[in-house]
Image (cartoon, rainbow, N blue to C red; front, side):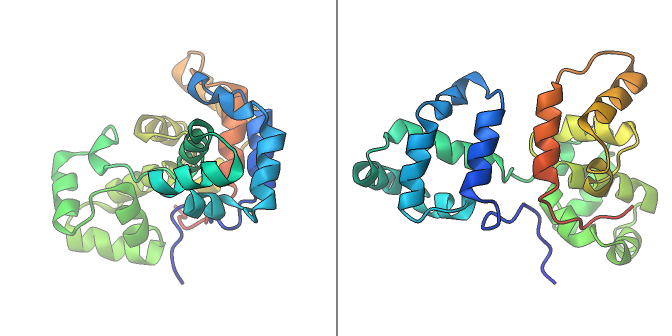
Length: 222
């Protein structure tokens, strides 16, 4: 069975994207996505765009964006922002060296096997059956490998970069499977109890991140 690193963009509907945009407090550079949103998304729907994959394929290049802008009447600026927003639902893999607290020696050993980012590691060591064999082959401890696998898994979630993945791991949340078992309020409480300080992310941010995380394949079990 193919291991799915990102959410399945063909299963994430245009309606769900619209609902998310309407319900969230967007960053300043994306707030214009809410302007005439109903009207613009109706145009997308009329052109048989029904999910994230359709948007990605329709707006995959500057030329395609320009062509669609002419045919739809939606501005190039709006379509470009929309494509950026959709891309953020499928985050780029994180270089393993970006995760805090990982030894250079372990990174070098993994790199020799072609494992250099979170996607490589997720695909090679997500299933527990392959993880034990990989640890022996590479020459690193299973405990250290599983810590890195857990952070790589968490980094698949929307808004979770390498530093936040480390923070989540250190609070006791070691995988997407474990993350989605918590409420946003519980995660914030875990963070504040662990680090004795307020979070720098909002309850709404965490709620949205969990919504997207629940769309992910649960490939890692620690």
